Amino acid sequence: MSTPIIHMENIKKHYGNVIALNGVTFDVRAGECHCLLGDNGAGKSTFIKTMSGVHKPTEGSITFEGKALSFNSPRDAMEAGIATVFQDLAMIPLMSVTRNFFMGREPTKGRGLLKRFDIDTANEITMTEMRKMGINLRGPDQAVGTLSGGERQTVAIARAVHFGAKVLILDEPTSALGVRQTANVLATINRVRAQGVGVVFISHNVRHAMAVGDRFTVLNRGQTLGTATRGDINAAQLQDLMAGGQEMAELEGSLGGTI
Ligand SMILES: Nc1ncnc2c1ncn2[C@@H]1O[C@H](COP(=O)(O)OP(=O)(O)OP(=O)(O)O)[C@@H](O)[C@H]1O
Ligand SMILES: [Mg+2]
Image (cartoon, rainbow, N blue to C red; front, side):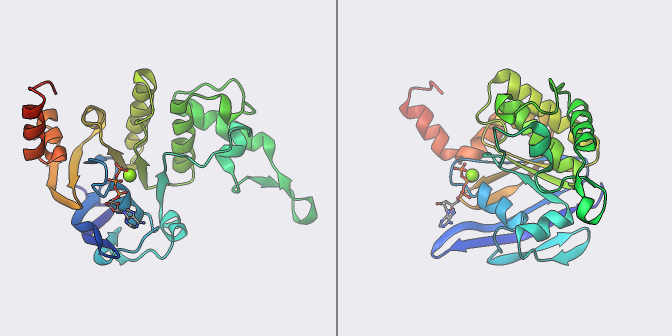
């Protein structure tokens, strides 16, 4: 087994007297997809925010590529190679795919006062990177607003990988998508993983997670019962862990076994 790119040990996070995380241990290795599952309010977003430098953990340690580390800002985490694709994506619908792809990191040509945006290079990189992810754009100036939700997720993922992500965190990338688009995003995750990037896939959909996950960690009210490896756990068991077993059984009982 390879050493993890990032290892989070016994992470606790309190918001005032709300305990959002109560000792979570989680790591990500190169080329794997590690799924973080949990019901609403379980602490998934809080956890990845500590991983991506948005929040400092109240307690716990982070080791990145073997060294103890503390991120002071999302920029620190990004520079280390941790990229997060949030659900609202931070894209501008009326702007072209190319503009969205670079957004502040545009290639330039010329020097000094003659320095300007190198649109041809930018267009070419965008078309190539999108093609690698299985999406043939009509053209680089196609507006992001005309892409489907799944294609937009793919632009955001391709962008993160192009700018050197080692760990890619996807917060519920499939929750608003239909079947076909979900399949496309899951295929994109596979491609990214094949390039050696470690993927953290957050979901509360067990089937989506089972389709791409190598390992599964379930959060339940800020705690985890450990991490399972693909093959050691089935969908029903994962679902049970997510719902906290007991509660699910009670719910099934009260609904006459319909779920
Ligand atoms: N900024 C905050 N201030 C106070 N409490 C917060 C804050 N952010 C989250 N919480 C609380 O921490 C707990 C975990 O929230 P979190 O958003 O991490 O859950 P989640 O697993 O991402 O849920 P969802 O599936 O709904 O996105 C919840 O009880 C939430 O109310
Ligand atoms: Mg969340």
